[in-house]
Image (cartoon, rainbow, N blue to C red; front, side, top):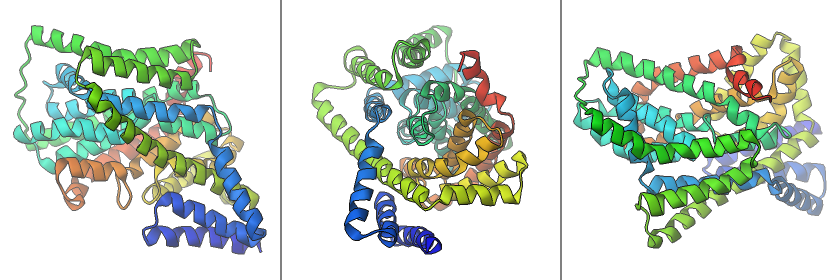
Length: 432
C-alpha cells in the first residue's frame, strides 16, 4: 500500500502544478490526498491542519516578516541608488564596468535586504537603462541583473537560510549566516568573469569618470546603508541578539534611514509598504506551512529513509552522492520555488550527507546555491520573470546570454560543494 501512497503524493503534485494550481495549494492538496489513503477523512484533515500550524509555530520564523518589511523599506528608500553609486566608485572603471557595478550593487543590496526579487527589481530598474544608454546589449544587461540578484540569498541576512535552519532541525542561524559570505562572493566573482569576457569580446567602452571628491561623497552616502550589515550580523555573532531580534532591529534601522535620514519615504507611503510586506509574508508563510505538512507526510511514509537507502545503494562515494544530489536539486529548482524545495528536500537529503560526513552548515549553503540557479530558469523562476519585466524583454531573448552565467554559477557551486572549507572557514573562525 505504501507505494500507492507515494505515487499519489508525487503524481497529484505534478498534475496540480501542470494545470497551473499555485504551488502552496498543490503541496497542501497532494499531502491531504496521500493522507486520505492512510487514515480516515476527518483525521487526515485534522493532521494536515495541525502540521501546517505547528510548522509555523517557530520563533525563528518571526525573522522572515521583519526582513521582508526591512527589504521593502530599503527598496523604496533610495538605498539601491546609493549602493549603485558606491559600486561605481569601486569597479566602474574596469572593462565591462557597468556590468560589474550591477553585480556588486546586487551583492550589497541582497546582503542588506536578503531578497533576490527585491534586488532584481531595485538594481535592475536603475542599471538596465544606464547600461543600454552606454551601448550594452540589453539581453546581456538583463542576464547580469537576473543572476547577480541571487547572491543576496547566500550573503546574509538571508530568509532562506532561516528556513533551512528550521528544516534541518536547528542548525545555528548565526553559523549559516557566517558561512554564506565566501560562497556568495565566489558566486559574484564567477559572474564578473563572464561579464569581463563578454565586455572584452564586444569591446564595450569605459566612459565612467568620477572625481576624487565625488567618489568620497558617494562613499559616505553609502556608509549608513552598509552599516546595517555590520549592525545585524555583528550583533548576532557577538551574541547581543538572536536572528529574530536582529530582523526587528533591521526594520527599525531601515525605517529611520529611509524616512528621516534619506527622506525618500513619506509617512503617507507607509501603509502601501506595510500592505506589500504583509502580502509577501502571507505567500511565504503559506508555502512554509504546506511544505512542513508535506515533509511530515513523507516522513510518515518513510520516504526519506527509502531515498537514503537507494542513494547509498548506488554508491558510498561522497563525491558521487553529492553530484547526484546536486543534479536532482538543479532539476527540482526549475519547477519548484526555493522555500518549499528547502523544506521538503532537506529532511530527505540531509541524513544521507551527514552519514557521509558532510557538515549540515556546508550542505545548507550548497543547497541554497544550487536552488538559486532555479530562480533564474523557466518555467517558475521568479527572479527571471522580474528581471525580464524590468528590462521589458521576453524570456526567449534572455536565455542565450543567461547560459554562460549559468555555467559560471554551476562552477561556483561545484567549488563550494567539494571544498567545504569555503563555507566552513568563517563560522569555525568565530567558534561555530
